[in-house]
Image (cartoon, rainbow over all chains, first blue to last red; front, side, top):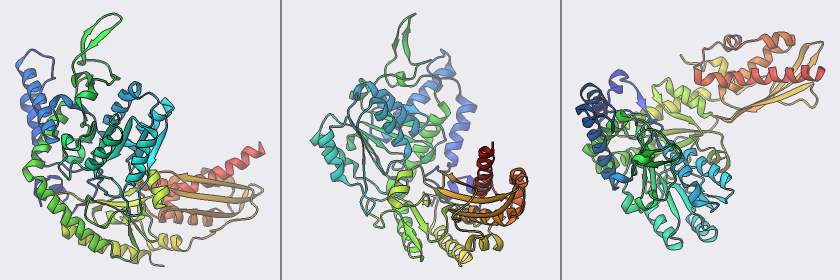
Length: 401
Length: 125
């Protein structure tokens, strides 16, 4: 469905794009929004006392409201960043004085961008750093997580809503409720980079303290991301990036700051990115998550039916469709992922080969250096999965000894 | 262009000079962290000539075939010849043009071989 909305496929009509978990393609409406903005309404925001700047500022702040509504937040709780990586790094740095040397808990299924900022913060603060493991079904060991929360009294628990490797969707709402029961002081940070394109995410419903996602994985341009932080926590964060636009009064030896979220957005923001993100959200809403989920679940089921049955294929993720997203990492016996990806490219099939920014998961849990990953989106079809299955079988034959 | 010609697959499936020497003059293992490929080269050298090479490792077909072909090519050559052997030369040896994302794979074995020789000359100095 919706393939016709994406101009990339007009220019690459045979392209089978299975790498949306890395970055999605952009619908025409998102491209148009950026063109229109530059052609009809561009200027810097928050500064000029002229019509265009006021127009751009209104547009920018209206987009913030739309983003807030999209995830069930208040617009003051939306900080624009360059992406999930930037969001989490900023948050970790801003939390440093607040959490002191309290323990930090994360999980082995995190993308490096929700792992390294915490690992490094723990090193700087000389605090305990715990990594929750997964079980044989590629699900988080929740008891291990709750045990850490109880015994180590961490100030931060950072975890993903959906793994970019296994596709596992964590029961975030249930996890947060349980953590709050054990220790209400815990700050719970959710990486929603993978989940936001595929399911309705509501920060109030989840009751998380912070949540991050990237625009470019949800049909928006690169270089725009979101950091949601609950108001009660925003007031306690330390500012770490200083410059234009985030101040109230600057004196020789001191300065005071603008209100949040502006105080967290030093420098000219990525205005076109925000405009594009707004258009991307409108695009997602025009399809509706019910339809997206239905389509992607059907494709996922079909993927498992067609690919998992190929002799020598091993999927590193839940086979059961419940609580899993349309991301599949797998191994094919005797064929290195890089060879497989290069050879699939000959069939115009774009897949990802590597550790997908989750080295520990690959090295220690899967016991492989790399895997091949297929991720599905609104523009993928069953025919494309058929083509993939045929291609894998052909490639296997070519490598036969 | 399909880089996986029969010759390359053959070297991957039946690597030449694969294994380990109990005694060698120099040895070096090089790893490509991004994909986990690792190639170890062991060499025997006499009068600045490569007398024998054995390689071991794990990797993609490009990395393994490159190592296999390289060992065949270099046994009997002077160490100067090996040290001046460029990536372009290696590509000619492989008979394929590699895309940027695969250059590292092919180059791993050449890097390991040159490093092994360099440890030898470092020792001599």
